[in-house]
Amino acid sequence: MAVNTGTNWTCYDSSTMTAREIYGRTLAEMAKNDDRIVALTADLEKSTALNKFSAVHPDRCFNVGIAEQNLMGAAAGMALTGLIPFASTFAIMACLRGGEQIRTDITYQNLPVKIIATHSGISFGHAGTTHHCTEDFAIMRSMANMTVICPADGIETSKAVQACIDVPGPVYMRIGRGFEPPVYENEDYDFQIGKANVMRDGSDLTIITCGIGVLQSINAAKTLAERDGIQVQVVNMHTIKPIDRQAVVAAARKTGKILTVEEHNVEGGLGDAVASVLAEEGVSCRFRKHGVMDLYTIIGYAEDLYSYYKLDANGIADVVRNMLGIETPADEDWEDE
Image 1 (cartoon, helix red, strand yellow):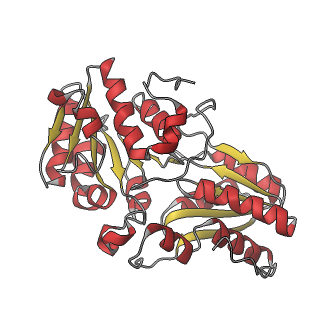
Image 2 (tube, rainbow, N blue to C red):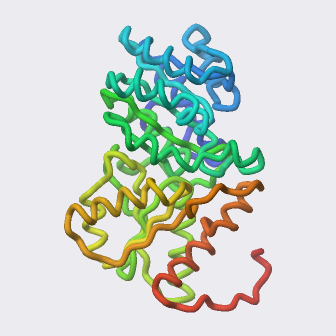
């Protein structure tokens, strides 16, 4: 089944491609029909998969060198000429090294620059703490005019990249480093910026999450249903800003308990965005934030870090049990370890 947005690969190919590879290929296909699209990178063309774009449109891909400030400034200048620049580098370098230029050159002028940041969260685990990025939600959602998106997998990345072209202002989108397992079986679902998707129904508690947390929360919900009889609703809040306020309120009123899960510092991220909605709407419920608990993450392979910080399915299930006051059942089956 061909992806319904004009890409020349199928949804089944997504299981063998990383989200950033899908981003590069999607952008290359989009640019065939839109001369306004250009791509910029800070000496990370291959790492951000913009080599997929430059192979097709070599005259529309620009490498500014290891200079993230120049990356954002050049993208702003191109936007002022009527182009739609997609600027890509590692997330930590985009939001911190290029942060001033994003604020002053891009968001202050409300320019249509699309910042696609790769190697986000702790996905670049073995590169070290300096290359982890658990602050970008807090930084980017605090900038006026900025839309902030965190897709769940490659298919959603493709949909988000294509949808963001219609956003008149700036967009920040974070994706991971490597192969994150697919969440969606195919592209036949509705994706709208600012509109959450309910991934699993439940009545006892709602997990509101994004990015890698979506699949892990779904798997945690399955485990909790099988072992504990707990029915957990999972909401994919792929757009951090503007957040789907209606979905947050509906979840609180339906289950009375909300747990947010994010690959980000719990200070300033998705959890705080959800908490703000609950407070402003005057909706009362049991609430807990889960993610990186206001610390600098250790060095290790991503899958080990997800387990260490309880961001995998088993860890999330334990957090839910703790929130509900349920003892974690003993597991004597080590075959899955």
